Image (tube, rainbow, N blue to C red):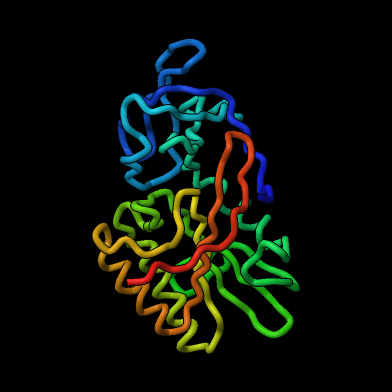
Length: 236
């Protein structure tokens, strides 16, 4: 296993409640005080953020923050599942800069947050023989060994895939989804049709149009994001 990013936790706690999409309450293990924590993941995370579950927190660095803590991970079946989307870009960048880990091989250069139509796509990769638009998604849900995205309806995610399909069709340019799968218990990846049938439909349209999909399995041990290799799309 190869390390992708060092993200050590600052405190352990017990999750108490989710007040809204971006705010939760956690009882700190050391002081037993109840603290509000920032949740940097818009997903439902029901299998992770429920009362009584163990969580890991990061101390906020900015003094003008409304909360002193940010949620990093929650425990699922003995594994710490990383749920902080604020690190997705740096994790993806570290992967892209390593030829052995990157699904796209050796790059000449890349640009981040490049506008495409009505969206900003995470990366525009420049290679010797082609250029590739790459959108990054984080996956924290798994059922029976299948990693599933999304865990909540995502109009934004659907729009991103539609933009990638358009650039494939109209500009004859390569495009890909890089899925950061934070479930080490998963063996394959598929769109979560029951949760968001519209995204699942456009995902299948993308595959038919030539969209590359690279689900990369990662794990988090409380200190390090580890690279576990690419997993296939689920059959059926």
